[in-house]
Image 1: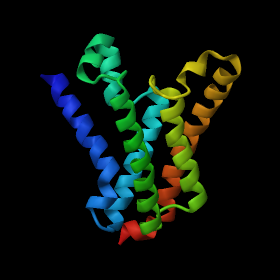
Image 2 (image 1 turned 135 degrees about the vertical axis):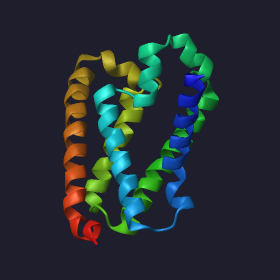
Image 3 (image 1 turned 90 degrees about the vertical axis):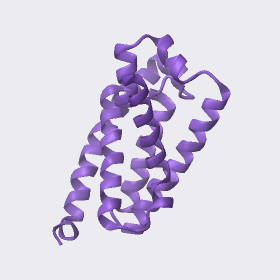
Length: 168
C-alpha cells in the first residue's frame, strides 16, 4: 500500500517538475520555489546517489520489487526517461529565463550537474557501466563533491540575488 502511494507521489513529482512552465504561467514566487525544489533535489541526488524516493525502495525493498513496480530495463522506460529528462532541462531553462532568477552561466552549470546525475549516478544511466574505471571513479568522486557544493552555493546565491523581490 505505502509503496503504491510513494510510487504515485514520485510520478506526480516527476510530471510536475517536467511540465511546470507549460502549465503555470510566469509567477515569480512559484518559479522561485520551483527552482529551489530542483536545486534541493540535485543536492539530495548527490548525497543519496539517487532520487530520495527511489532510495527508499533500494534501501528497504528488494531489487525485484523495484523491477516489478517499474521495469527499469525496458527500452520504453529508457526512452520515456530520456524524453522526460530533455523536457525537464527545457523547463528549468524556461523558468530561469522568464523570471530572471539566476544568471545564464549558473543556469548552464546547474543543467550540467543535473544531467550528470542521469549519465553517471543513475543505475540505468548511459555511462554508469564505466564507473569501475579508475579514472572515472576519481572524476566521479570529485565531480559529485563539486555538484553538491555548487548546488548549495547556487541556492544561497539565488536567495541573495532575489532577496528584494522575495521581501515584497
